[in-house]
Image 1 (spheres, rainbow, N blue to C red):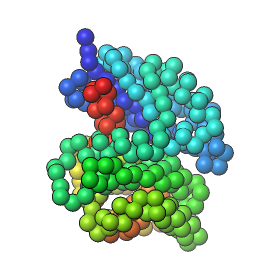
Image 2 (image 1 turned 60 degrees about the vertical axis):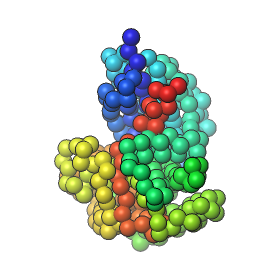
Image 3 (image 1 turned 90 degrees about the horizontal axis):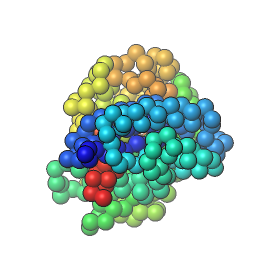
Image 4 (image 1 turned 90 degrees about the vertical axis):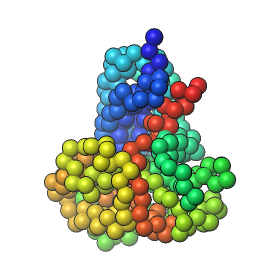
Length: 307
């Protein structure tokens, strides 16, 4: 009998799958851009079109799970569903499609799974380790202090900042100012809520995960075809973050797609993600971050294997 387990992440911008063997070996990884959060920030509801896009992908993932004889799984939904008034409708249908538990994660739960996944294959360090998980609708900051995880979920992500402030094409001075103000306000909230953040400024190991960081790593490496071994644990300087942010800000989404490494479906929101990333690095006085392709899915799989 197979001991394979599956984790599915219904994020604001993408829907992703990880199937693992009972020994923890990845059998299948997949990512599809579904933009589940389309319009949620303005309307407070998931649109029928966005839900249907996501359910189509979930049906594909169910078939993959059947082929790999998955016995146990968990589907999690994050910011977009968390903020939607019709979240129960989405979860009920998602549960029916995938055939296993589906639930919304709180910001704290999201940070816990993400931290566990992103740090599972890192060497020990005397420097405190923090993750920054730039999603579509929220950005999680998580830091382990004296064995306890301290986290904060900022109400900003690459899709939310694009929709509310920056726009999706050429960045105007007004858009630039609005985005910076929005991000600064959320970072202020984070530092007020978690005093330990202040204590690690200037001496923290920063690990970046999720689509914004992965795409930046691909752009930096000029990867026309995704290669996990190149992206995972790639060191990225703040100068690289700023260079790509400013370069993409001067381009249309169509022009951005010409860069080797740009992921289709991120060309209109990546710039906003880089604004967030640069602001986090600035606030914590960090000159470089490590890209991690191990993330919330890996954290969920680990918990399923231990259950």
